[in-house]
Length: 429
Image 1: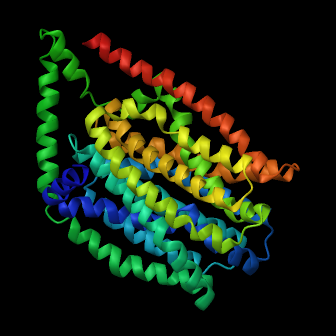
Image 2 (image 1 turned 90 degrees about the vertical axis):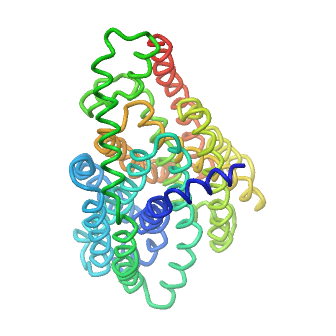
Image 3 (image 1 turned 180 degrees about the horizontal axis):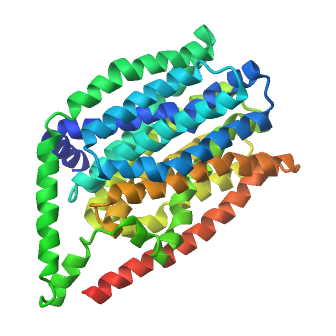
């Protein structure tokens, strides 16, 4: 039944859904788990300590977070074809640039470019396009984006490890630049052919619904409730909404925790006495579970709504951290990866579908760029958080308990914020 529903989606919107999947996959080249694979080689090349490399990475990531509200908002102002073209082009240039740098200053700038174009804007394009142009099938379309992320996590680490061993890290990233330029860019152009018709239908439909809302003053309560659910909030209005700030720690938590974990996974392996190959080899299990959970949660969102699923998103991740803290045996890596995959697949799909449900779609790009700013900031904070606690003399498995406490607190705040949305719907009805 679930696969049949996805089959209908792919049949009706093949190229556009594949576009979302491919842009999500290509965002991998600026994601922490991919850059982290190059970290050891980069540290040796620049004679950096772990602290220095972490500082470089954090600086580049924070610069990216500061710029995202500006660059991300542009997706509301120009065509998706043009916006996507330049984002993919600059991703290719970013991959080429970091392979050429020879000083720490330029390395920071190179990390900034990768984080801005890869993690930031490619992810932004994928999620915003699926969230904006799908309504009844938004959950399933968003799940396809999550599958793109999971596919990158499953395939690219092993390829990167082999490439670095054969040609070094610089030529490996040069090869990535060529791949993006020769494969991803032409695919993006082709997959978005005919998108103007989809966008015109979207604009006409949204305009009609907004016109209907202006004549709702004398309507029944039910009509008013329906109208309020399609109101499109501007970013400045979202910033004045207290519920946004209550939800924000939770929707940033997945990025904060997962980035920290993947950044320090090899340190965890050393602490547990596991080989690096054993640790990274189980990324495939994580990706498989994340993909499966994304598919399931996409269907659940379309049936129940993202608002109802959100309270459960951080529970599996907290359980994964507790297992790492309590168990040292090698077998714990499997339930750990399974729980982490469940949390990641559920959170990525649900969080992306949440914003259009809460704040509408017309200004979705500017709202999501605001959200991505905090996500990127959280991804910069996570590795430093764990690294600092370990430097204070605590073990890695002890330090993750601080993140468990954060996840519990964030879940509590989120439930208060989500209750605000539920109550507003009840009152309007």
